[in-house]
Length: 112
Length: 116
Figure 1: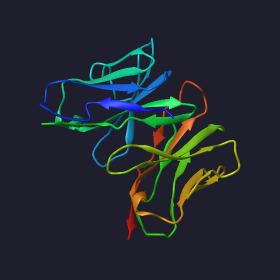
Figure 2: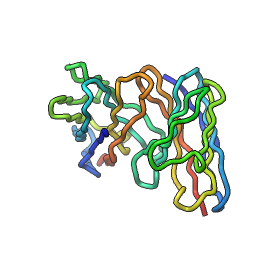
Figure 3: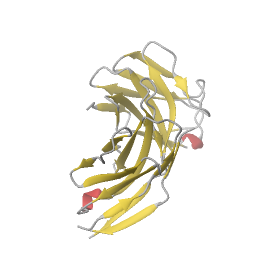
Figure 4: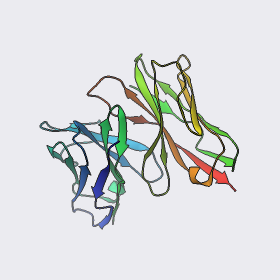
């Protein structure tokens, strides 16, 4: 399995500001994924991040709002830009490792 | 597009009893993977069990087993000898077997309560 860490674990931010979430994996992986989990709901994929290429965004998510970096095979960042209260969610990164996907502990974001 | 449906928003079971969580899915692909994930209040997503669509044999992991009915596109999770630590949200998920596109599609989840 893969061990994944995320920073920060939680944050409270003011509307209009941006937050960058970091995801670190203990092994090299090709694909990393970013999911959003709104309060009381399921997980929705934001984008897929491959090292050395632009992230692929799902319908309803755009790069200007959720820019992603993937500088190497063990690290990725997701930025939530120009935040509004509707962005209050848990953000999770995951990696695909031998078919199975493993998740980080999540970042709980509250926007006031 | 693939969809995953969990029709039971909440379930409860007496400790030490058995409970079955339901999941159906829709896909036009013939080869894929199905998963059950557990999310306790800590919010950590934990992989419970995995099923390959090409395998007829149902997967088992200790007290957890699945009933995979490919023709019916059904994938239920059975938890035997329920324990207090099993209390969590359970999500059913689907992914293609096509390498390079392993994003997960999740169901809406079932909240499982264990009654002492």
